[in-house]
Amino acid sequence: MLADLTAGALSDARQREILRPLAQVEAAATDAPPALDALSALAPADRVKIIAEVKRASPSRGDLADIPDPAQLAVSYERGGASAISVLTEGRKFKGSLDDLVNVRESVGIPVLRKDFISIPYQVFEARAAGADLALLIVAALDTKTLTELYGLITDLGMTALVETHSADELERALDLGAGLIGVNARNLSTFELDRDLFGRLAPQIPSGVIRVAESAVLAPADVAHYREAGADVVLIGEALVTNDPILTLGEFLAV
Image (tube, rainbow, N blue to C red):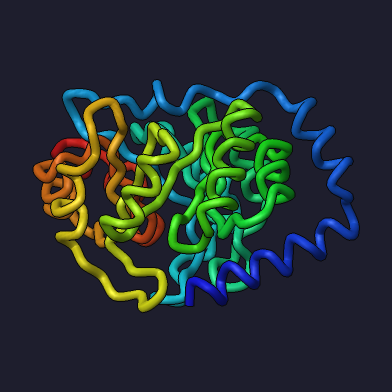
């Protein structure tokens, strides 16, 4: 599944590149206002921090929410206490778009993450041109050379990479990059199986000074508490927020 999602996102990016060449996107990325400091926004605190996600659908759950106005939802997230907003821009399975990201960035004052299956520099430049402050890199989808090059480009453009891992080996590769923001996803993106305790097993291997993000398997405050007790500084939440009252639900999660 991960290979299919990455290949599909790459194909779609190549189609966009025909209409908007790399040089044009590079120029737009260079001209964009500076990225916000996501590491400061997500730095460890007395309470857990939340990256709230704009998420219409997923391959594992199908349609989740219509979300006709992603910007309005993002504003609700910000009012509810989210520290950053994640915007799914993959169109085939998650029904997102770069337009969603642009609209969200224009509407909130907190960092915005482009969450997609990034595998080429064009997608990184797109993210910055659209106003992203963070970009997702999935270790399982990238060879070491590509991972290193994309991480360097994200950093050079002033953004922060959220480096996502699913195993001890992938975590080691993320640490080798010098990543300051590392996610552990409970969902195996190859099989889509969930392992709620994966974060707890890997977190002790993440050194102090690196921000720990727990991803997936969050439906209730107890799930946030589970991750917080295991050492999570930040929890990324999508489904539970788009299928419930976002402000009320955020309040319950942040009270953990």
